[in-house]
Amino acid sequence: MRRAQRVAGGRSGEEGFTLVEVLVAFAIVALVSLTVIRLAGDMAVAGRRVETAAIRLDEAEGIVLLRAAAGSLRAGIEQGRFSDGQPWTLSVVDVGPALGWRDLPPLWRVRLALGGPDGSLVYATLIAGGLGGG
Image 1 (cartoon, one colour):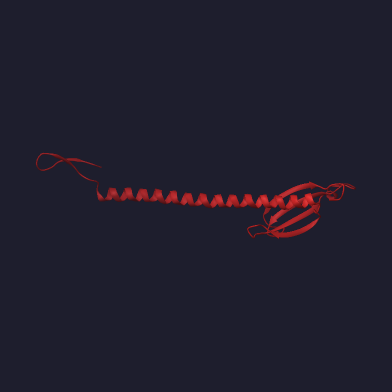
Image 2 (cartoon, helix red, strand yellow):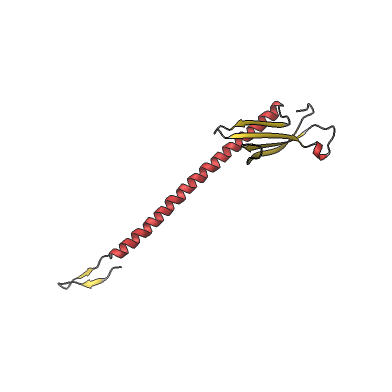
C-alpha cells in the first residue's frame, strides 16, 4: 500500500511497504510454492503407480496368452515372479462342469493375482479350450 506524502522541501514522495505487508506476501508465496511442489510430487508418484500397474497388466496378459497358445493351460495353480520381482499366482479352473456342460472342451477361468491366490487380482479371463483338450 503506497501512500503519497508531502516531504520536506515541497516535493511528494512515496512511502514503501510495511514490514507486515512484506511478511504476509512472502508467506502467501511460500504457501503457494509448497502446495505446487506437493502436488507435483503426488502426481509423479501416481504416474509411477499407473505405469507399474500397466506394465504388470501387460506381463500378466502375456503369461496367460503364452500358456494358452502353447496348449499348456491346465487346471491348477502356478506361481512365478513379475519383472519387478513381485510374486504372482496363476489359478486355472475348468468352469464347464459347474455350468452343467458335459462332453465339451474345457472352459478355463484364468485368474492371475499378485502374491498368493487370494492376492489382488491383476488379470482375469475365460478361455475356451480346443478340441485337442488344451
